[in-house]
Image (cartoon, rainbow, N blue to C red; front, side, top):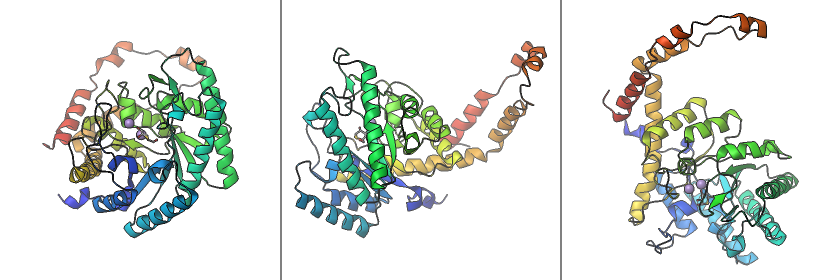
Length: 383
Ligand code: GLT
Ligand code: MN
Ligand code: MN
C-alpha cells in the first residue's frame, strides 16, 4: 500500500484556523503551556505539514486595538507569507465572543449599541477576509444565548439574529464580495444555552432570511456529538438542503465540554460514515480542522496533531473506497436494493386497495449485523 495515498495534497482542501495550530493550551483551570505562535509562523507550519489553507477570525490576525497603519502592515506581511508558502485563505470569520462587550451576546444582545457594534465588527471582518479572497464567511454565535431566560424572550433573540443576517447579506451584495455565509451551531458553552443548538435549527432559520441562497451551515463534529447527536445525519440534511457550505472536523466524547480533539481520534467509526458520505456525494468544499493539540504537547506535538487530522481523513477516505468495492458488502447492499423497487404509491384509491402481507414483510432477516461486522473488519484492517 502506497503511503502516498495518505499524504495531504492541495486538492484535498485541508484547512486549519490560526486559532487551531496557534492554540496555546489555555483552559478554565490553567494558563498557556505553549509560546505564542505568530500568524506568519502558523502559516509556515501549515505549509510544512501539507495543508491547503488557513482561516482566521479578524482578531487572530489584526489585534482589536490596531491602528490603520498597523492593520495595513499586518495584512501586507501576512499576504506575503501566504503567497511565499503557497497557503490559501478560503474562509474568514469574526470574533464575537472574546471581548467583555459580548458578555450578553452579540447580534442578540439586549443593548442595541452592542448589536450595532457586533454588526459593524462583522462588516469589517468581511472587508478583511475579502482582501485575502476568502469565499466563505463563518458565523459561530457562541455568546448568542443565556444563563437565565429572565433576560429576554427567546423569540426576540431569533428576530434580532434575522435582522443582523439580513443586514449583512445586504452588505455582501453592496460590496460585491460574493461571500457564502456558513452558520455554525453549538448547544452550549460558553453560554448555558445557545439559541441555535443544532445544525438543523439553523437550517430552519435560514429559510426565513431575505437572501437565504447566500446562507448555509458549518456543522462541527464536536458540536453535534456533545449532545449525542449524529454528525453524519446533520451533514446529510445540510447537504440534501444544498446548504453544506463548510465543515468543521474534529472529535468529541458525547456529554462533555467542547473538546475539539484530533479528527477521528475518538469516534473513528462515526467519522468513517461521515467521510464516506462527503466523498460519495462529491462534497467539494473545504475540509477544515477546527481542533487543537493536547495540552501536553510542544510545537512538534502540534505538527503531529495537524498531520494526524489529515492522515486520518485520508485513511477513512480510502476505507470508504474499499467499502464501495467490497464484494461481500456490495452483495448485501444489492439484496437491500432489491426490496427497494416500486412503481410508486399510485393514487389514494390504488394504495388503499392494495393488500400487504405484514408477516412476510417482517420475516426476512436484513443482514445488518453481517454488514456492520464486514465494515468493522474493514476498519480494523483484518479483511
Ligand atoms: C471557536 C469555536 C469554533 C468556531 C470558531 C469560529 S471560534 O474556536 O470553538 O467552533 O468554529 O468562530
Ligand atoms: Mn468546538
Ligand atoms: Mn467550529
